[in-house]
Length: 111
Image (cartoon, rainbow, N blue to C red; front, side):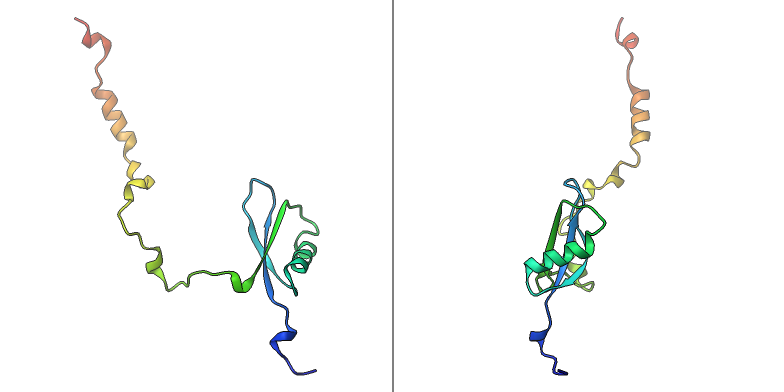
């Protein structure tokens, strides 16, 4: 049996576990299984034997798609949205102090 066909190998499933309902699913590893039902069981045995979880996903590795590190243009911004970044608020303390110093008091307003 030295003949190795792709039919003899099980597909790889990526496993994602959610520890609590407030947490996101986190990738914990991969399993080999003939179908998604068995992949869920194998994943439970391998990754949840000691840990508790509320949900588990198995995804065929061939169905996971992503970008390569060479595709920097994919993440480039089309418009300048620097106003949404926190860096624009660096001098707010100085501005607030200057504003408070210029404020008029009630005594200055009354004759």
